[in-house]
Length: 114
Image (cartoon, rainbow, N blue to C red):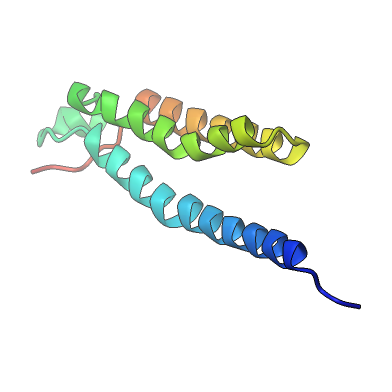
């Protein structure tokens, strides 16, 4: 059995795409998650901040933008290749992004005082 050049390119391209996806999902996702948490955190230093935290309004665009930025490559993959896998991947990425945006805006972080 011989391995043809197109097959090697196809397998290599899929492997490279998988590695890029893992690197995008974990390091970039965790970085955006932490920066989003700090951007909308309540930084008041009184007792009321711990009992009733409120959003930092300056961080709201950052949270929404980071959610869109993180899901963008998956949506581009759907525009390039419309397979069931890419559609499922983009739907999952969009749902995860939307969940974290709503969670950060509904429940601001507390106890970050400076």
